[in-house]
Image (tube, rainbow, N blue to C red; front, side, top):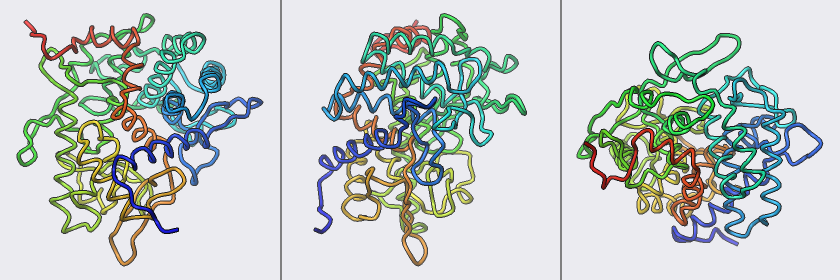
Length: 410
């Protein structure tokens, strides 16, 4: 049978189910190991390595699966509960934070990686959402994990910024000193009852602003990669919210996504992969391995970073911001590039440069996760609904003075 063409709405449902399958299949379900519930970072290149961020998205997948009747509520709740047990008892970390990459069997550190604040945040967002959805013991365990996080430990007291990474070998390094994907950490940090941060941390990071063509006043990230405008939005519904300075992060992501697409259109003569329906530059697997692709506006040297590789997760993860443009891209990928589609839906990237088109054989958890969650939010708002129901999240937004745009600040 030949490859059957579908329209965009049917394709996003197929992509949702197949992305969900990643989190159901690339998981350790052996109850006799210390790594029950841990989910692989990627499918082929590191089969024994799990990612704590993959687990966060995997907890969201359980909710999505129940809502679509792909898994029973009872089984999903048990998996969520036992996964949180794994983090309470076995996963290696410090001060409530966890190592970015861990062994899928033992829960111990892999690759001499860092204790990651952002990946811990993605995991805890998944845990909080699962707690709200399943309630009972799942919510109690999510609360334990959240209370254990010492946000203040990860703060540079001299700059009032979060550090970007920590290892026992070299200590802390880097700073979240400007806008990127980290908005979630301020919402969670300020409302902690055990280790709260001051709300000034949210207002102290830089908000670099510029235009791209006729798209005005984009608060842009260093690399211009789309994931930086997506990850916090997967959990926090910033739609119709603004902070006391009048910043609307949802609208900003719309503008940044439009700029990313325009950049691809502007550069389609240089890279054959780029077009009005092939866009969404963000880190992914390319012909040279995992690379940090991005788009303007940014401060990174795109002539060095970009090689024509496009990841489907870029446009898919922006479906809540640019639904028409994202669905057009999804339809293009599915209907015109059969080699980009596989057992878990869209593969991680493709590149049409050179003599022979290149298609990744890999799937990566965070890339399947952001697409899955954003599709579900676009269709039903499910993950937004349950995450935003949490008392800590509501309190965090209140403390940061991120409220309904209709309110006037004095």
